[in-house]
Length: 282
Image 1 (tube, rainbow, N blue to C red):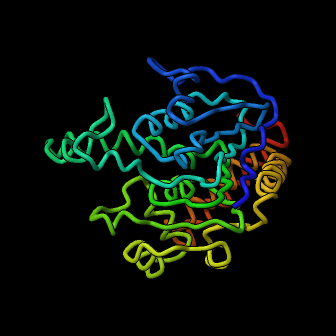
Image 2: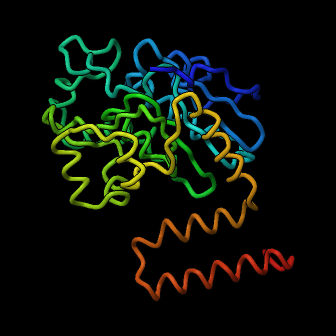
Image 3: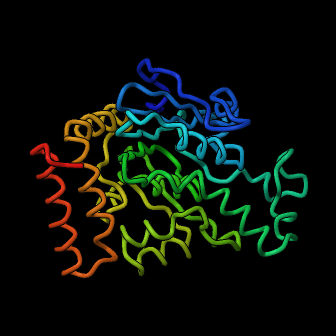
């Protein structure tokens, strides 16, 4: 398979640390690199030799990236180096030895419900910020996107995939469930019945089905993936920021609102936009 994501990202400015004990150098050691170029931020999974297998350290880095984004950022592009977007969870977490310094599943299972819930909630923080209202996030996905990798792609608003993409949700086959925020967007995109079938069978979903079923916005030849994702990012940046934020909020809330509630939300949003354009906003 070709590896278009190995091409260098355009020059950018360094990002600020995400909080105590975190810094861009530590993020990169965990397999995450952040580059900011004006209104565009690029997050790269950068452990290609390990097929970007995910660890708690990577999840902490992803969470820190989200909290460190400058206010100027409007679009976040998520990409990965190597032949695979992410082969999923590092299997060392299933072994008695585990990953040094990290809880393995045996030790996590032995904690109280409250402790286990808190640990998993911490893991989820690396996945939950991608749908925040002030940015639009785009995942450029090639090769394998398995389990946690699939859920990270689902965390984004939009997905552009290479024609060699292979999505799969393998957690159920391991006796677990998808718990990294992937279940809600999967159901929203493909419906309950298809989502249930994909998760329980753990089967592969390829590019053609991903586009036809709503998992991906666009499929392109692998060599064109980065360019296609950046073209989409450029188109997203062309629209006025406040209008984009209002539109995203309207669409995100549409699933849970009734018809009349959505009509009212549209009126309120349009009133705010008109007043802002007329210079009458707060």
